[in-house]
Image 1: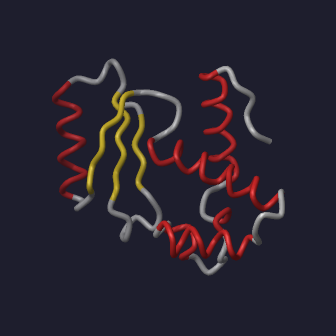
Image 2: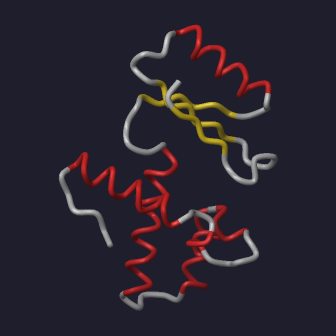
Length: 125
């Protein structure tokens, strides 16, 4: 196994992402998937690549939200409300009431940088 991701708060979030390395044998993968199921998690398995499924998609959504804020398209509160009510996105559920508060900046930055390096495109700043 290379990596796994449990989502916060762990007791409420249903997903477990497992990144399967080239060296991972079938028995190890089956054991980790079984542990996830015993934890009552929905398990997804992905091949080794920069970022998890969710972190890659969240990086795109987060970047676009920041661009919209920067361009004055909408306020942070309205972006937050649209994500929560229109897309059922959990970012808006925290007391902080901002989509940027739920993902550490280092995670978003690392995901964007790794994806940009892989795709030879500059990372948004």
